[in-house]
Amino acid sequence: MKVFESLYREYYQKVYAFLYRLCADGDLAEDLTQETFLQAYKSFHKFRGDCEVFTWLAAIGKHTYFKYLKKRKLHLDAANLELVAQSYMKGDISPEEHVHKKDVEDAVRKVVDTIPKKYRDVVLLRIYAELPFSQIAQILKISESSAKVIYFRAKKMLMEVLQHELEM
Image (cartoon, rainbow, N blue to C red; front, side, top):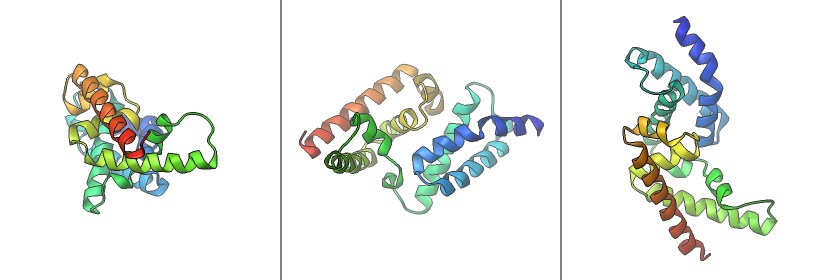
């Protein structure tokens, strides 16, 4: 129990930040974080140490969030994709650019929701959890090179659709 309590104290903020970036709702992120640690506690005996603790917790958090979306019949459009748009748009922005940024966010939201699950999972873990490919590979039980290939293919898909949709 004391070991788990120290893990909770050490990783709480990082798990909360990861979930907040996914949902952009402080109260929901708090609830999801608590549920993540509850699920982790229940399955702590199964943790073999094959990956870092945060990688394991992020995987549980991601599944908890997706379960929340599915239960409420929501889709990824409920996720905060502002981070993706920010990576696309650089620097200070004018009001016109702000509107354009919102269009980019909406387009990215649509694209991410329609890409195959294997691409979506890698994109979300890379962008929101800011996990290295080695940890993404462990979470998804694929090779590190597969995680990289999937991410770069997903990124290419996103950019092609964005260029087409936004006529850039």
